[in-house]
Image (cartoon, rainbow over all chains, first blue to last red):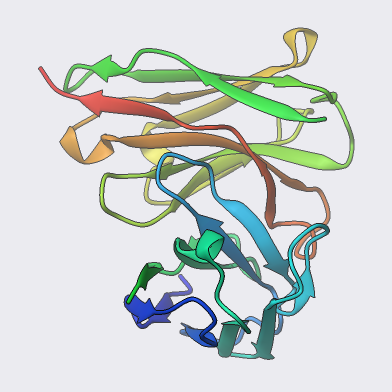
Length: 108
Length: 123
């Protein structure tokens, strides 16, 4: 199994801040990594796939980077709508597909 | 616009079988371009991939659930279903039906989600 570890688990920030979330894979996943945004009571929303490709309609303040085992999601200027929990997901191996534990971005 | 909608009992007794159905609208489940699957999130915890199915019936299951899991497809009604047997309290979760692309690995990210349904395992 490929284990996905996110850090931090909680991040306190203010509107306008630049925030970065890290996701580490237990073995190389090339760039087969997706990022999702999850709000309470709502379904997760795909933000980024293949580590750095922005999904259609996702604001450009979101960006992803990394390859191999180290990845990051950056929000360049945090907006009120961005307070949510973010999950990474690897899809290099399907035995099983796996998610990180999540990073909650909360208001400072 | 594609929509996925979960349906099924919100309460299941321990040792019984959890059964959910996902109805797909705005698109065909028989499309050769997609797999259809399930993901769950226990209260206060992260996301767990359960498994998925192609319209031909080909399945992929999470090994941790495989012995209790059946995912099936009903192309005539544009639906797919989940059955999880011998449930216990840790199976309590919000269950989401999802879609991902056919090609591996590039397509295996989840681009469409249902709104989710809470299933509680309790006597």
